[in-house]
Amino acid sequence: MKRILVTGGAGFLGSHLCERLLGEGHDVICVENFYTGSKANVAHLMSSPYFELVRHDVTFPLYVEVDEIYNLACPASPIHYQFDPVQTTKTSVHGAINMLGLAKRVKAKILQASTSEVYGDPAVHPQREDYWGNVNPIGVRSCYDEGKRCAETLFFDYHRQHRLRIKVARIFNTYGPRMHPNDGRVVSNFIVQALKGEPITIYGDGQQTRSFCYVDELIDGLVRLMDTGDEITGPMNLGNPNEFTILELAEQVIELTGSKSAIEKRPLPQDDPTQRQPDIAYARETLGWEPVIQLRDGLRRTIDYFDRLLTAG
Ligand code: NAD
Ligand code: UDP
Image (cartoon, rainbow, N blue to C red):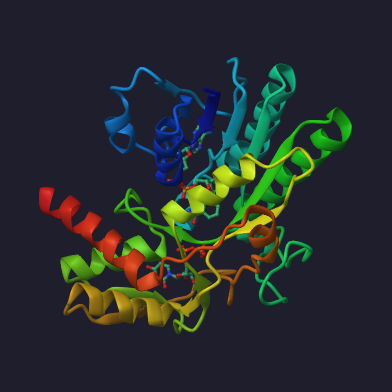
């Protein structure tokens, strides 16, 4: 049994990760400031004697004794990370410094939830880990993109300078149950709009692409990466390479929900990446990991979740 810290553990990905780690028999400490996460996401774990929920903001130092740290704390939806951009950068950068400092003191292995956003609006397609990206340093997405890039820098400097055991995962768009209905990201937006019979809001012409991974498979990739030997640091892309236009996603959601919602075009937000698809050869070879859940099947499960949530009121 390992003692494992998950920051951002009551968020969308964090709650699934806590559940998976508890299921494997570990002792889990979930650290949360409830900015976008909620107690409801981990309510079903609270009865376990091996689960602890701590209200704490990772921009402040934390003193706990753990064997492993998964650093997930950071709002991930553009609407939420742009609401308080200074706090977003602080969370990424000060949060990384605090968690790396903790890992150094207690000699823990530490994994960073980085992002495909480090590639910005990519000029290389699909994106491989050796691509340095195309990121606007002063735009509205920069607090997140540059914050995550700086966090990667800190991880690799702690590794080189202090021999820390690090793992950096570059996560591509992931979806599934426990996304917040007001999360603002595209999959939850479209499903909630379709179920409520409201217009499906497509930003721009809908020809921009994303590659969507179902949450369970992404979590499996994170755990496998954490369990690799010390020579594996990443950065490693984790995502499903099946690429769709946003218009195709809207059409699938309308079909699967049987909704009568109309499609409504809205202005494209600033610096919205035009395309995104992970090259996962490195993860496939190193972890023996490959997502197999098709978008259609993952959407069905996610629609079921939101249907129950909205019906329960
Ligand atoms: P989320 O917003 O649901 O979860 C983030 C969690 O971090 C929330 O529970 C939030 O309250 C918490 N948090 C935010 N600031 C904090 C702070 N200062 N101190 C403590 N807790 C704080 O988003 P998610 O989709 O679960 O993303 C989790 C991580 O994975 C994030 O770091 C995100 O950047 C990364 N990621 C996610 C995706 C995706 O598609 N879901 C893609 C790339 C990267
Ligand atoms: N998007 C959209 N309608 C929405 C929400 C998002 O058309 O209601 C688009 C958004 O402009 C982007 C894509 O969907 O091109 C993915 O957006 P999301 O916020 O989910 O994540 P991103 O990958 O941009 O961080």
